[in-house]
Image 1 (cartoon, rainbow, N blue to C red):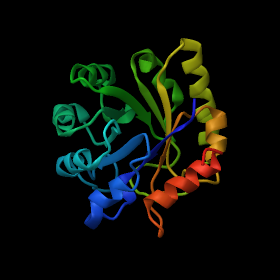
Image 2: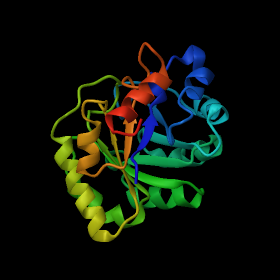
Image 3: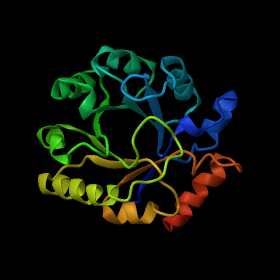
Image 4: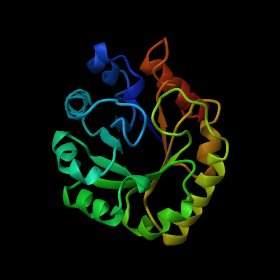
Length: 220
């Protein structure tokens, strides 16, 4: 199956949010990074931006919300109501990961799990059977435009192996420093969804950035 692309709106021009979202209507996903200034050292945006993104998205485009917040259970219902199709929570951010996944499914959303580059992959094992998406961070979360961490490639291969062993249909997503220079390597390692921010929303606009990324995968 062709890899799916997930432009991260964190990198877009928020004075032109509607236009920036429209420019990437051809992407399968829109990735929405929510940061609380506690779990990560930055604050991004919350429910109003998510709701505006939902309104500007193309019909059928998946709104993929990545919660970089402490105790995400407190806000899952709010993000679902604001337009999330998929909600991803961090292994490190909750003491009740399995319960959070159940809550997300109970809200009618796809449930994802994510872990930081310094967290052991084994922490995913207990919940892999019950998730729809696994996100491997290839930078330390909190800021855009960071350098890709090369060891993430092997982590992607490992998780892909585990998902295949389980016969899981879960998407394997990668986020952080993804661009034309490493996109094919990540797909070869087993990624099925690539999150890209600054490499999509460049000086020539999101549509051109999306085309470049697809071209690097031989899809343009």
